[in-house]
Image (cartoon, rainbow, N blue to C red; front, top):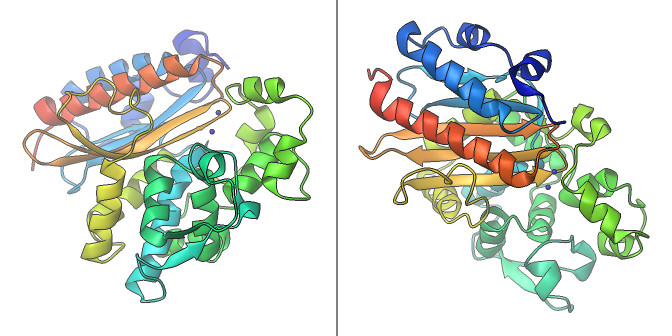
Length: 337
């Protein structure tokens, strides 16, 4: 789902902070190596335009943390689907759902996206919980997401699950239909696809999809700080949020993610295993997940970009460059306990 900053100065005014300020957020980082890292990450973040937020640390909690704007709220876009998956898998763990349980997908639930709304246009579709999770996390299918959000008990139930994980700076307020209706200023009546098809200027909507929207960027709903998202991922991948079986399910699906090849994975060695989830809307381009380093230890990393008018490819390249800098730092330089 989707302001160009003029160099480092604009980043500072936007709150990105200088290397010294970033270090203050991450006092655990030894100064000799971290100052150079933060200077480089700040430089790379400027390439995204707008404001970039980063949170990265080892999954096992040892060693330093890389934090840049880590306590600022950013639009999550489709990265909120990680929390939806977590709540659904909690219901599976509690015996209220099963992975092979079939759920009807009424055409009235369709939301514009690549798979279901585009290809399964007729009534009569049912899909298993497992396949809906697969489509939601690997291809960011919006219809699958809203079917699962409803099955999860709605956005409020998803936020409650996040709170139960001890994460306070992340909130889920709308399903994708509600979020997109407001972003594109579509009528609240009728189905999403009816409102979408009745929109008078599809070309204008297409242009708006990749431009910053000040009202949207300032909206506290459906936001997360980088630290909050990284904390949630840490709990999930450490097996603290879900059963071992459900932890394997979500990790396995996220490793099969098909979107955002130019983001976290963009400049990593080709064989690197990355379990991740992307998000895109207006001035926002995000990618969050867990990178497995060559020796087997894992790196939690969250990269959020907001308020950017740069071409999406430039935002993605900045994310890829930051991810590679973090990967190399935690592999070669950061102390290990």
